[in-house]
Amino acid sequence: MKISYDPETDSLYIDLLARTSTESEEVSPGFVIDYDSEGCVVGIEIDHASRRLDLHELTLSKIPVEQQPQR
Image 1 (tube, helix red, strand yellow):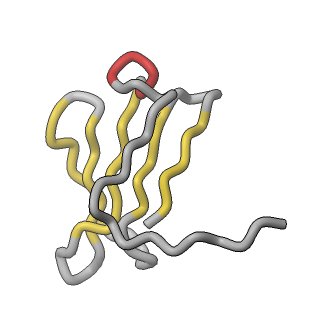
Image 2: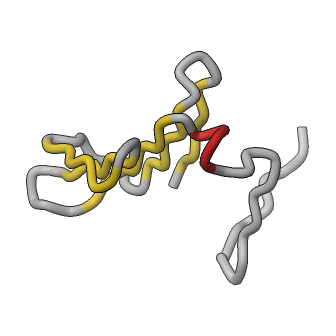
């Protein structure tokens, strides 16, 4: 999973699966769900993200995350 933010467009994208999106559906104003060819959710786009979310905080809870070696 990858989370990316574009400050120019103020949009946040949560890439859930490394698959190509073939269909998108706006499920609520500014919230778009992307689907692959099999109907699986592959991503979520949030427009005007800085107005809808606290972009300064990200909390992971009970997610098995491996620490990356420091460079």
